[in-house]
Image (cartoon, rainbow, N blue to C red; front, side, top):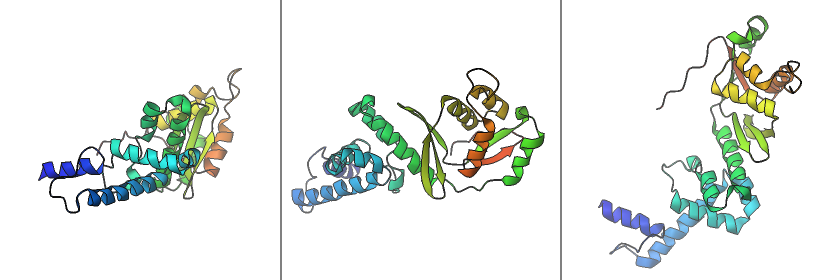
Length: 232
């Protein structure tokens, strides 16, 4: 039974012939495969709209089917399918094509929009006024991500229910990376060379905090380090 099921899957993905005795034979197989081709394009276009616009409909549809055959979905939620696309494009189109960067940005925005909705703990911000940065940790909201793009670092987050992104300076990226890694506020400030501490510094924590509150990056301030996540 398993061998027959695998043969059917292989045939649908274009890896083999239709299993003997299959109802409808090659005609039925072509219909099933046509449905999968259309499904692969629709499913991939949901998170990868910018990539689709860059490639055009025909080329994107071809990419979607090729990617589906190489990395078929592993669960029924097709919103989880696509995380491997950037690496797939590196292998097949090359980093210099710019397509992997587009895929990374699209996927990060998609993940941000699907992230848990967590409100700001406004009361916790009082800690910023009476605790030293060595004893403080800033936690960012789910969906906030830092991307390394060919044009420079990019921050991705969700505001309302829409994914947003913006380019960051090197200092802003260093600061954000430290927060995402769970280091203290003092370590994050040191990594960013806080404004006024050196000739090359270009990071202003006050301006960052205003932006973090306005754009919904920040989740809370806490006097204890974040607990590492445990695998499911």
